Length: 102
Image (tube, rainbow, N blue to C red; front, side, top):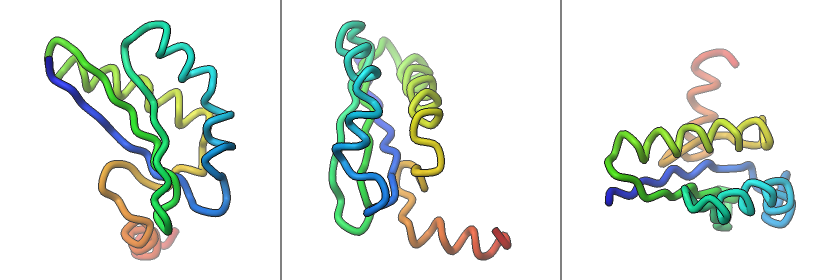
């Protein structure tokens, strides 16, 4: 079974690991019951907190669909505290924002 994972990075010092865990507790519980995916938290120093979504599915397309749906729900809950996904560093995101005049 293919596995897929997509970490979202949350701003350090603004929204700590325990606050993120509390905000996402009902999603963690729902996923534990459904068995479709898991959510894990990883403190990453200056990079903040990584929220990793992992799933097992019949194929990559199904896995990516589950990840995308869960990521959308997490974005609704954490909003602007998320600054990037996957390998996007805070520095890269800031540079892109500056280049785009944001």
